[in-house]
Length: 474
Image 1: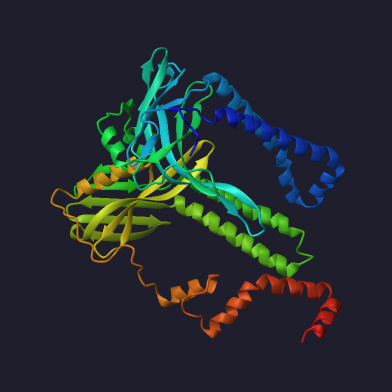
Image 2: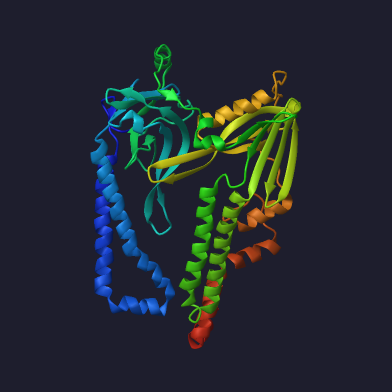
């Protein structure tokens, strides 16, 4: 938990722009030192293998880092410290996270502000070679779009979030801990206001809940989700049969295009990188090229899938009708109202870009036999997902009564035998049932493919050494 004794919380912007300058200086110093010292050797490397042209991007990356550092510095001096004031303090999981912030921005220049509260798991990931890196995973998020209040010659944002009780409170720093971040973004002329505040949240006790229940949290005018850019997903229309929720093609186009470009870049990089090894270790290199191309193809196809699929869910008194189109293929499914237990909200993805973290939620319909059927996706923020859920339940009509669950949801449905053996074949863990002998040997052979290919290449390069070693073996 951040060591904060006052209800005023400062952003991390001052630390952030200093770190950007430090990184810019180190990156550019190393890049230009290598260019000056390398000289003609770098040009020869470019001629020998085109993959080294990738390193020509390093000076431009250095300039880009400098531009970011300059923007961060100018933004800091433009807006100042701008602390967030929490009330109640500290904020509480399972109750209320509320407060306000005053900003030196004229009201006419700030028609709206976007606030998002995120619960983050920060942990240290260790690789097989002993190296470690710090990573973050967003496990929950909610979002508010507010119309700022006039406050003297500036603006004030009054906000209130209700963090669910099942989420973790802020924790002390360790190899794996949870923290809460508030991101405030306002598009204004010139440099935008975009800052992150790490807020202290504790688990709400019964006394605190009872005390704060008598306090009416003041909030600025809330702009409904349907009136913002996230409100375009889904398209909701009234039909003669009921209410239709349409999630169109390309609803995750930013992530999709990023995956497509990543897959294409990985394939091109692998082509040029491994080209120089084909004469040295041809068999091993061919296997590595195949694996690299296969990985690039999977990433590329995943990006295409995100673009080329749509989902339509029609809800009426009779039940739910789902239509999923993927690459033109149609999959239909109908669930009668008497078989519906509930519709739940679940997280199904997240992304981070700069200060902005986004968490998307999906809607899962639960049937009486314990099946979960996805009837909505790409919903940004917990409250918006809850809003769509309520609209779907309302479309079932007042006569709908939740069905009784006959099979536990967490009960694992038996998988087909062929799928079990396939999973056991590629898994590194010991399966519950031992593999048949006709599967054990192919698995061992596949797991040692690269070693076998390397030994074969060594045999071609040094046949005498291979013959000598083979004579020593029993």
